[in-house]
Amino acid sequence: MKRSLVHPEAKNDWASIRQPEHITAVLDVMLIKLDDYFARFCAAPPSTEADLVAVLGNLGEVQASSKNKQSDTRSWLLERWASGLKKHYDKEERKYKAMFSERRMEKFRDGNPKNFKDRLKKECPVIINAMRPTDDENMQKWQGSFARAKPQEMFDTFEEVLDFARPHVEAFENDLPETSLLPDTFAELAAFSDEPNLSLPGVIGAGIKSTVVYYLFPSHFHRAVRHSLFGFYFLSDMQAFGLPSGTNEFIMINDTDKRREQRGSEYNYKIDQNYWYPYDLFMFYSYWLFHKLECRSENYGVPLDPDFRFAYVFTFLHFVCECNDGSMQVMAGGYGHE
Image (cartoon, one colour):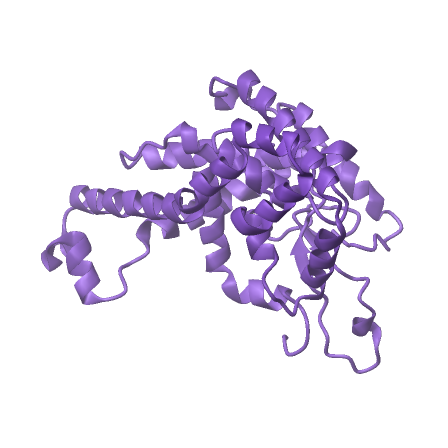
């Protein structure tokens, strides 16, 4: 989508992406691209002969029968998922669960809200990462907004997010079969994007709050961040699917930057993830993708634990982005990119 919505009909993008025929078209393309990316996910070769020996145990197995090759793929797939979960979930899980435990939140509620804000800066990984020195103008702006944000409002926002998330976990205690998955299955999660009390403008948006609930409830919430939305962008083959703006729904083109309009400018617009993407629709595609990954993994004898459902999904989408690293760098915008 385009940030400026300068296209006369661009506002219709938001209605168009919910149309059944549009969703079907997106899923059809994703299904084709998924087979390609999953094959690469399973088949990425070790980088050296020594690694090959370590993985296969015997170089002669390179010419093994199809049965042995499937066994090798299973071993590699197990390693893929294990290393992915360790990197994209296990590494930070305890920090989030310690920071946002019910007992800890009660202490923060009864104490000085400034303590909560201070602990966020020291103990919450997503905040710590965002506070690091950067040349990125948007991140500098965010850091200024965070510094000015009132501690009580910040605590209240996170408390509201947690109070919103827990009933959803209880309501969807059992797994949803793929046959019952519909675009409106997660309709109640639209509030995660829309309700004013679940956000703090300019400070706590979809990326931060979805990251927090992802680490607390990985079976029920996915992270709506750069690598997940860009992953869907590439998985949907970067197509516009007839949207009025002529752009893909999972990205946001910052066409409001006037540097692009200067005569002779070689400046490229920056393309971000669509940070306004409806969370309920995002969860629909995420849940759909989990089912597809689950089926393909089981074909190799590798079951996926639904308790970590969206850690698998994020791992895979992160891999999709890695496959398109060159494009990701170009979309970062600025000078010097063709």
